[in-house]
Image (tube, rainbow, N blue to C red; front, side, top):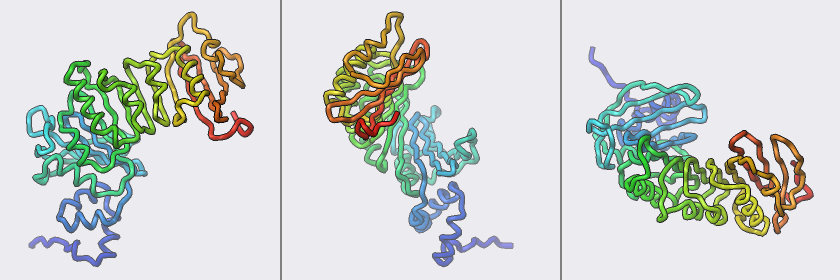
Length: 338
């Protein structure tokens, strides 16, 4: 018996839409490659996706996450033995497809054809299928060799980038240059930046990054941080998981906030190393703090700036290190509730 293909594309539009909506995330993606018409049909559904993440770690991964925590990842490898993609014009070997749920380890489901498309074409196609407001990218320093400016122009609007250091890579010149190229390309267009143990340089310091118009800045690892960098922060949320600031530094930082600096800042968190001679009075000196109660473990108090805005400062003793958290209230002092 001769096999006859079902004329799916010839179905009435309303019926075709119903069928496409019953497809799984992967089936919808695979169908988009059948023809230009099928791509247009899937795209016209404007199917919402919670997050699209592009991971540049030598091997390139593009992942889709739904609100139901379903995830599909496409892994693209170079045809070279190491699998590392070095150009957006490289054509990957056949793609490994991983499927599952974010709450469980995902596994490789099958392999699909590379469609004869380059890495750049794959990125453009996969990012064009669904409706997503949250695009993010992860770069592994020392493993990402692509042209960053071209890559930025190819992406849809990215909301966040995360830079991590490849295990074994130090702060050599190539890694520093790689970090600078990524940040210079993407800092002007993203809202959230995470830097995890990546090498910076005097040409692009924490202070330069903090001056970018960001919503969120997160740092973890050893950086050459200075108080001046804190004072010039132009971000809404900042978290610094490093112990390079002292209680005296934070006291000065809070005093200057009370005088009107860092007006954009809403949330701030930093780690402080507890020394034998650490004294909470150093942090509180001159802050006119209210609500402070002596406690061996938790300190909790409020301060007010020159515009009448209230901030809550809270810290918990965790042994060697303790976090100092600073949060702004949009309410005036009389309506503040702790």
